[in-house]
Length: 172
Image (cartoon, rainbow, N blue to C red; front, side, top):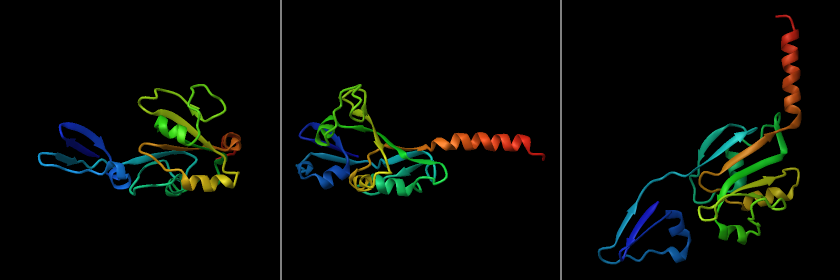
């Protein structure tokens, strides 16, 4: 994070924003102060992934496809390819830009709840059985503290039940 005190005004922004957004160019004058703090960014993965972990966002932009690959992808024995979810916070302006209607309770668009001033908590649902979604995942950028969740396949609970029955009825 970069803390800027320019002409008596103090703002905080990320170094990535300064590097990639021409409107964020910092022109320093005498007595201006610039502080740079190292705050590593990360994302989380849960569910039927290759591993449950907190992983760094160590490059300026990491796509959702890259993030899923970093966690080892979905577990072929357990994962539901129709149940890939991304939980995160979106800026209201970004929601409009990608065409998401952020009205709470709207069942047509992704689930959006919460305060628009602090960012909108939103859940994106991805069906990996649709090949077009693989291309969309490459264009979807991960953000700080996003969470990837891959649901278990419906048959996993039944399989676990059968395994429990087998272990209790099989002589040791």
